[in-house]
Length: 368
Ligand SMILES: Cc1ncc(COP(=O)(O)O)c(C=O)c1O
Image 1 (cartoon, rainbow, N blue to C red):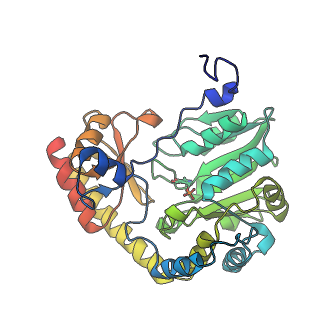
Image 2: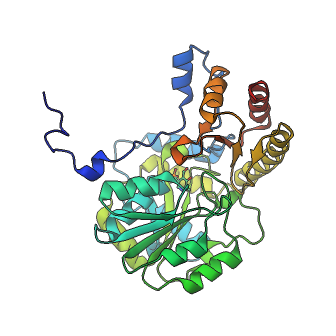
């Protein structure tokens, strides 16, 4: 029998998509290696090792009793709370099933086959996936010192450039672009392209010269700032993120999104998480001290580590990273090999709790 491809049922742009490989789920590893439940640790998807805020868990639990009802499709209460936090109007807030959905919606809403999306090489892979799925050409410029090269990006802007994605800090490198480079970039950028600042790791940043995207909304009218509840807020499993953008842009995203794109449980959990400053502060502290220890210990072992402003580090090992990844798995430790980015000697490791970091280091040491 002929496959759907042979019959021409799959569009060429879809057939060309290389499937995204997420961090290996703990349950999958335990099933495959017959490990006892709870014996493994996952430092592969930049999740919060402290889990969600207890307030978010409580709110989610309470909402389950109303699970027979459709959610508020406009996510009004959450959007109002976000609007208050950022001193913008509710009409300027968009929410999505993770910021990933907003990335996808931005491409589908604003770009067509005659436009082009610009970003960097070695950045969040979902920009490319969304472009491919929508049949929108993507152009990338190389990183410089593992960092977005904004001069090259400005240089690359042409008449077809419709949307620019900048992940700041970047995933998988953890590096950031500083204020001076960002402002120089804004000065050079023509008025037309929509600039998307993807700040999924914003809350972890400690660098004093980090350019908070929200502060540039007046200077750059067509600016979208994306943030998420998946990282410092510990709600990755509920899929909820948001974007702050001009009201008119939000109204177009609203036309394209599915009517109930975020669940009622996710909305109330996010709202509760937003009010738990203490949990956010603790999560940042655990990340900062864990990162300091992890980086120091890795460097002592001769592993090169790229300086990171996020909740993960990119490190270069002296053996093929895919092998080390497999050997770590056997010890019940999941990290992320970077082959998908063409980095064959790099692993990306999420900062865990002190205990998880110790366990990772102990498992890695004999493999080097
Ligand atoms: C740079 C960046 N942007 C966006 C996302 C998407 O996160 P989510 O869809 O969970 O909000 C991630 C997730 O890892 C990321 O690293």
